[in-house]
Image (cartoon, rainbow, N blue to C red):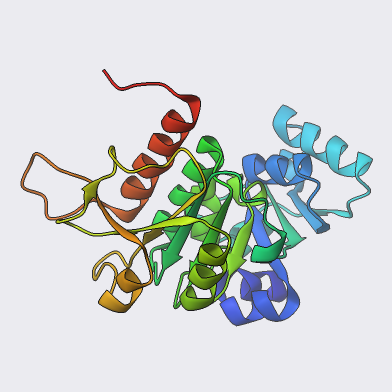
Length: 257
């Protein structure tokens, strides 16, 4: 149990082992459906008769996952979630190489994004909108942080995730004819008027500081989400979600009313 707590709380521990901990029936179900490599499944013994938990146990057995039943209260001492969960699992994770990603539409590039909730929201929206990949650059939050995993609602297992320096990412994409946009608060082209139907990359910056000028200079164009109220800027998760679904709308050839 000490190891599970370390995996939940320490990024270095997760990355040294290539293992993270997922909590709750929904995340475990998503991992099973995505054929993630399970190390083990841990179940609160008192919850084994619950229909959702019983179904997970059966699915895990079919996938030859090791299952450990723990006495009531043990998982509560391990879990990171505020609301104790009846199941958690240790699963192995891996990242994609940018060269292995099928570039068929929008690529979201996150530069120095620090909030795990924002990162999870972006991953979830990217999955829903059919984004090609998410590239994490600079001092980005760990995508396998427990909060990020929960916010992603399982989409972390569906979207290719790449970690690479921003310069390397933008150089690779430019050499392959991918149009690039830097998101800026103002003085950019409205995201509704940007060409997002084809191959394109949009760079989202840090929640508080946005994109630095060096990062903006790596992109071909500037993009702005115009606002009618007095807010200075949008939450990074909201901004990325709007852009992802605008790209989906353009790819489908629909029009706004």
